[in-house]
Image 1 (cartoon, one colour):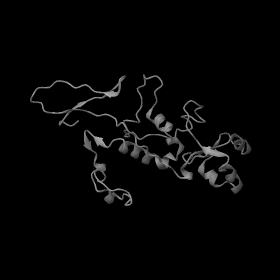
Image 2 (cartoon, helix red, strand yellow; image 1 turned 135 degrees about the vertical axis):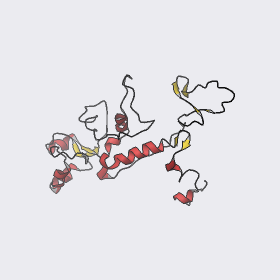
Image 3 (cartoon, helix red, strand yellow; image 1 turned 90 degrees about the horizontal axis):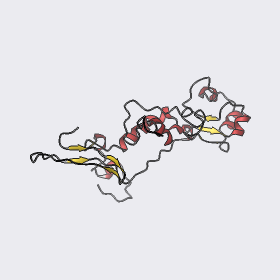
Image 4 (cartoon, helix red, strand yellow; image 1 turned 120 degrees about the vertical axis):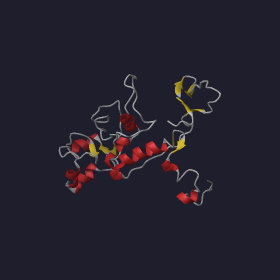
Amino acid sequence: MTTAEHPLPAQAHAGAARKAEGFATPKQDKKPQCARMLPKRVLPIIFLPGIMGSNLRMSMERQKELRQKDNIAWRPDTLDPSKPINITRAANESPADRQLRLDPLQTTVDIYDSSGPSNVVGDGRHGNVELAPNFDSALLASDPVVLSGGGTAAQKARARGWGEVFFKSYGQLLQHLESRLNSTFSEGKLRPEWHDVVGVEPKIWGADPKLPQQA
């Protein structure tokens, strides 16, 4: 931690979102006491993958018609040759079977639901979400194991919809955006990757010239 300040841990509190307590110091100690609080406003970032990067499941009727053991219509993360929707096998399907499998009227996004069967909508189906060992996000961290009803960081990512996309393709980008956009500052200082955005004339980083420009 930086020596230019006394960091105060912010704790959850019943009467407020977060609360921090300071302490007395000698007169010659001029370091400020600083607590980091989460912002009151949230700016949502919506990530829209292409159709080939979205995991799809088919209707029960179409699953029966194709005599398939599961309802997976398209899941590019699955490369196991023993799986019904192995990409190589799907590429060798007849045009008719491929049309039935990817029929927009009989398919939908394969959504995560932790309360449902694991291998159908839960962690088993969405096990493609595996976070990097060095991934760090204050808003996407594992709960203590002693916390009843808590979840892991990967489960929270799945609840956000990360398992609904081709994770081998988009996973690194999603983790990069999560860690960077929720961590603009580190130890009270602007992180290096933000220096070309914050405090810079907007036209330099390509802002729309038709909108008001103010650094």
